[in-house]
Length: 310
Length: 180
Image 1 (tube, helix red, strand yellow):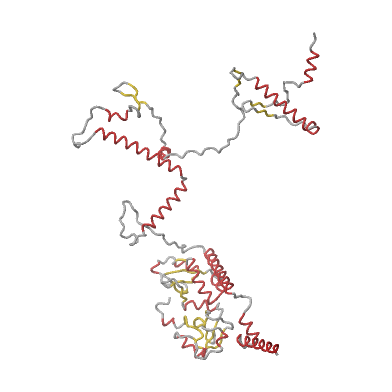
Image 2 (image 1 turned 180 degrees about the vertical axis):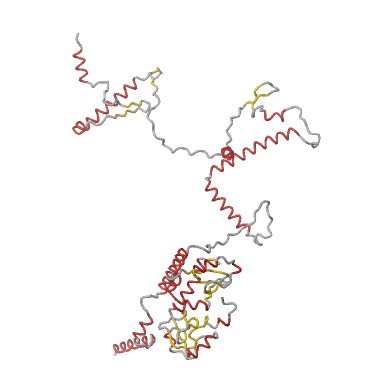
């Protein structure tokens, strides 16, 4: 029986499951993504946009589904499950890169001195017990002196000298010191360098103000150890020998500023340079002055009024 | 010796502008030779650049004077113009008064100018304006401040003061020790 006819008609009815393109599709099953890098066929794109888009989308989905079914599966109560491979597309970060951690004071010192970081083993060899013991922590080597059953004491030690307590105190103070330094490093990394300088200057300014803010202006205050003498701001003058042209420019600038000030004050007073008021009055009154002019005009005005009443 | 600070220049310039107005630019921006203002022991000197540069080599306590003394700063920071500045402000004066020969001697002894001695005056001189006092043959004698405006002087009696004395050339003799 020849089924090739049926198969051919079936194949014609349904598009092929094998997608073949000029540029192969980029598949990323990890993100369930297909990227079609082929150039758009302009003719079919313009002829029927919807059909063209659907056909390209179909090809892409077909290729993706084919790749998904090619993945190895393992059975589960809900049916076979496939593990998606890790994605290959590099996506940009959603968040900015974390800022580099501020180096601690020791790290900065070590970098300046060229000291290499050495990783200390957590365990150390105990010669007496012939085994590896913790450097610190449970049964730590650092607690050896506190836990030994007999301790050597110097001949000149106090009567109430407790060697166990002394050793423990020393260890605890080392821990406290480390904690203090850790906190200081954390505080230092919190604020930027410029901020710190500014705050330092602010604090110094406030301190200087408070030091002279007593009844005696700080004269009879108790001096703290290591306290520096207060210094005021020194006057600063231009050097005697500066470029004469620069000096001239500076004085002309001052002059123009002064000129502006006088003009402004005149304007506020209502004076104006364009009209010489005194001269105008003299001309208008024919040399008899402003008083005479005022009298003349008011007299005329009164006369006119009287005339009106009559 | 040092250049003036901005505040100092301001007070010097306002005082000078009271007498010569905008002609002050001619003092600062001179055509012939660059000049500058220098402060030495509260005194302000108007000095050419070349002699200023020469005087740099003199130590501050040893430097008595240089150029022309224009005036001095009082302890409260006010600037007082000296008679020595007359030479420069007389040539650029905005307002002038001329006094009669019989009024010259009283003015040179440090008295105010009364109306009887007034020869001529620049017209439209306002009240309280810095003026330069000249003799009738145009010799500058000193400077002062007007008590009344030109118009108001007409009505005054002959003994009324019209210019308050500020400085006169008689000070060259009277204040010889402290002037320069």
